[in-house]
Length: 164
Image (tube, rainbow, N blue to C red; front, side, top):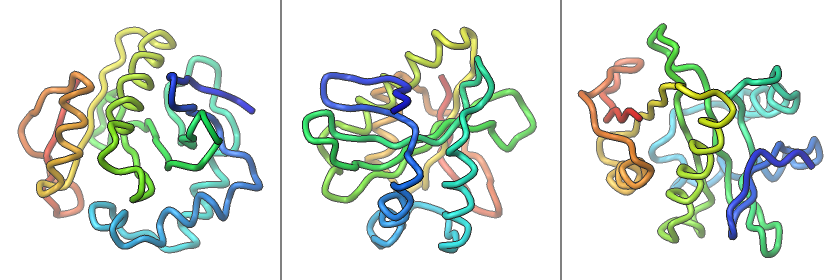
């Protein structure tokens, strides 16, 4: 198991190949999908398989599983990827199973992941975007130390933007 970082409650680690269906099940819940861009099942499979391979040493980008440390229950996924504005900014993203919403896990994950990645690559500029109506996710980003910036337009959709 390749652990990226952990907290007293959470483990952020690489997915195992046999966890593909677990990963895909996250996107079957309409409540989870309400703030995420639509992707087909085939798109999600491709994304999952591409991220099974570790990035180069010193990379701060990837897509990882988030698991409950107490019982290894799957909570969701988190990612860091190059932002789509042509800059060197790195975007934080995440999606959790609905039964884990509202428990402080997203804030805990964001703080831990960003802090870890600052040790891997100091000076990295992190950003995040959320649906304008996704106020809980905006609070998560603020708790992680990110500040609201002007809105960002992605694929014709206006999103709330945050920077760290």
